[in-house]
Image (cartoon, rainbow, N blue to C red; front, side, top):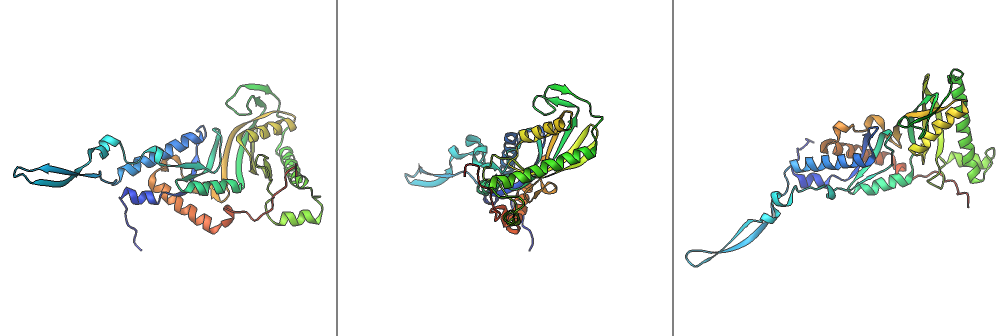
Length: 311
């Protein structure tokens, strides 16, 4: 079937409902990303063929004493009076994750009716994958590179093998913590059956949980680790880098955080800032709909959940 070019703004507006995969640059807040998306959508929609001005009925007196009824343009509904047809307040947006200003990478945004889908994706707490880069030998106040240096230490005794052993110990401690919170012995049959059901998720969405962590690259003094986690925050990842430096008998701070996967949203499918326009966003929504149909677990997990401490 041949594709048809649509220039009618109301028709395009009816299809502007869904979730789109974006690439958030570092140094930009999610609120700034939201404002940019809304501004670009309003600009592109107003460049299409918008609805004409409303008509009003006018009754005039003719020269031959007959009344003439005709329709004229209602100037109160003219674009020059009311402004552009599509305003920023008309578009609703909701993010599936709240990345910090320092974090870059994949972030999913629900637009208009897609905000309900974005809320379901957020409540489902899909697994996110990060590439976090740290700098050995310096510690900062906020554990990130944009703050004051508070400590310095030597790093000549640190090698990739030592970092790898430490990361393996961190992963093992988090896996052990999952079963401890559920009240099940990690060596028991019940623990095996619980793990077979899928990713074990904490009942409290404020509890960060690491499912996998490994050393991706080591170029002294820089090191990059890959983290598979849920319920994590930018501050938690910065503290993790700081603790890794301390456990290595040194100090460290975070120089970069990049999200490379959010559930089934991949880095290579995300829209760069130069592609944040109406046409590409509509294409991204169509791709997201295919992902949701192919992976229904994005909206409803069938895996088990851990019980809270108080239970």
